Amino acid sequence: MISVFSTSPEQTGALAAALAEAAEPGDVLVLVGELGAGKTAFSKAYGKALGVNEPMTSPTFTLAREYEGRLTLHHLDVYRLEVMAEVLDLDLPELLDSGGVVLIEWGDAILPMLPRDFLEVRFTFGEGDDDRNIELNPIGARWCARSDLLESLTDGTGQA
Image (tube, rainbow, N blue to C red):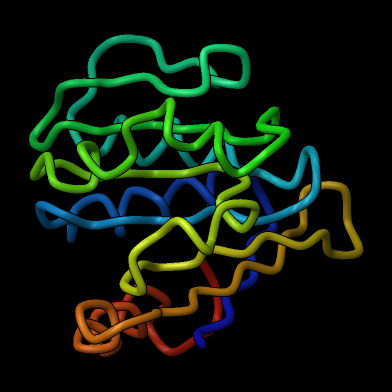
């Protein structure tokens, strides 16, 4: 696990942009954290760095949105799902096989439905209003093989 400290939405966005620059087809990112912790802001910065030109909105009510950039970005928000069976309505297996990137807000709610190869990005509040502790937790061989890349995103300072 790699711990990163951010003192502003811009720093959090810079971390998201660095991850997007390194994005590969088939990547899955699972964003975890309380309401208002920065998941959607991270998602927007990630999409922008991936080359998404249209405005990104939280898919809380639509559950899933697709954006075109350097890679197709499937942005999911599973906060409103009440039962695991609703995940099937998202065609998650098809999205995972699409060759794009799948970014899932509140993704810890559907972990049993995900492949065992993803990057967990966990947000927790810090002391200041904009302070965030962000943990990058690579799960599976694909992400563990990129641990050095993830570590390099912080320059060894722990700062985003």
